[in-house]
Length: 167
Image (cartoon, rainbow, N blue to C red; front, side, top):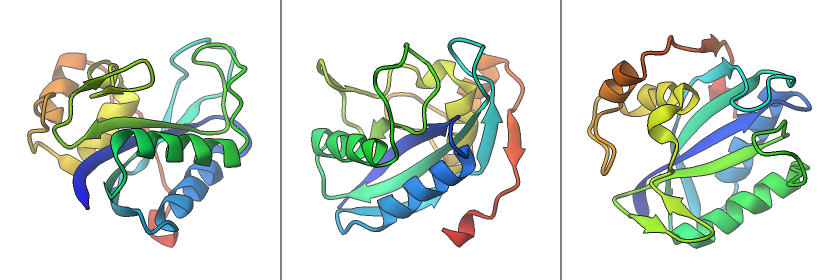
């Protein structure tokens, strides 16, 4: 199994905390994916249009036998299972958003997938949950998350007190 894989999870529709927890359960239920760690859940303002609810965000560290493209297909399948609509405006409200952030030291830039994810360094809703898992361990291709948080110069989003151990 390949390790050092990180995905971002986000939701702001239809009980967002439950959407995130359900996605984590689905990830745990397949033999091809093993969850290594899950961050705290964070409440964050929407990145796009502001006329939508706040998001709940998290990051999960995985091991998997799936290639990056296979994992992306699987993540889209999970989004679809949770009624994700792709007909909304860019950065619009959604039941579930699963982003492949890092896949070990893989660098990939195709029409379907860019690794590392293009927005990691500019998004507090990714960096703070990622920091929960990796602290200041250098990550391939992006550096130390703590340094990126300092450069971002944004305050830490609100942590939602949810017992992730129940997943």
